[in-house]
Length: 445
Image (tube, rainbow, N blue to C red; front, side, top):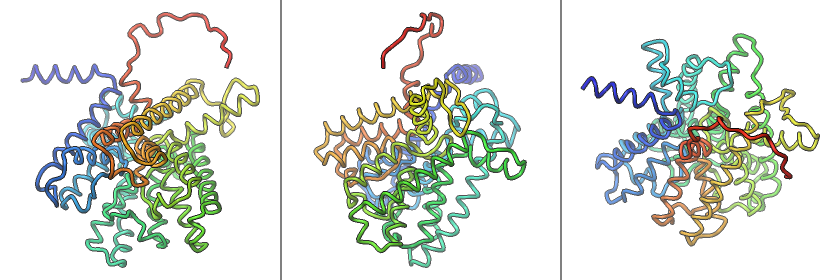
């Protein structure tokens, strides 16, 4: 037995962090699927196995797309399983394990450190152990404060079991999962300023990433300057939030029927829910105009920020992409963001990430259009929402065929890993990579 354990440990150590990352999230999905299939988890019998797998994948990937009603299909235990999967998926694979190891041994072994650095794309020089402690502490603090307020708001609104609803929605918001115990998401709270603001605050705090929170704390306590990553994230987030809110409020014909204050609040929330990839909605997505749908898709593709709980291409990748365009216009051979030159390998990774993301989105949308008979815009929207782990839908999810569910399921899983990470896992580099290089040649582009 001891020899078998040593062989298993050696096998794990020899695996690449990316491979272990895929295996870890797969294990979460499998465990969640088994638990949701138990009779104790189900409020109504007869749910198809594929729907249980779909819900487990959606929870671990913090997407929020559902083929059945979580509140109507699962018991309290089933809902507890779902929110646990969301929490595990939101703060990242091996984060809790690493935190427990730090609490017991006060250091990380090589395996945990390698995988954790793959999960959290950190700038060079950031202390990993201190970062993981900060992630767990920050998560517990923010979710607790959000749960307290939401429980109070739901109690005032006459919601049954307001404390449980408050806890569930606080975790779902911070982890940008978008799972709701209300079948119409948060549409009943469209005009409730407090619920809108608190859910938005939870979502933004999760989506902008733990790097920003760690940097902010060091700035506050040690008066250290924010890193380039944090400055870019904050600038891009603020710019996209303002631009999206103004465009939706001014141009959407359906929102014009609302009062000025409610229209602005609704436009802000829908922009927030797309760019943080949280997936809650206070207005029916299918009721928005065609131009607004396009804006929401663009926001979902751009997504949240690295080392956060959201999905999408990520704000720093978007900033690097536009920085590269600006450099080309200037005739420079380097990318400048916030007055600093970005390292060349980061620029290359950003271009690869954006390219592979758009390729994955195109393939996923194409397959959905082959297997489903729904509206073109609704199916493309569904694909963008799944890959971005957003959870917004124009109503196509419930009508998906089994083939369509499998397509969305795979896209959600790829979105949680990150398309470029999934690509590295699927297509490992050749063993002789880097040994043979030809001189660079010119190419017209």
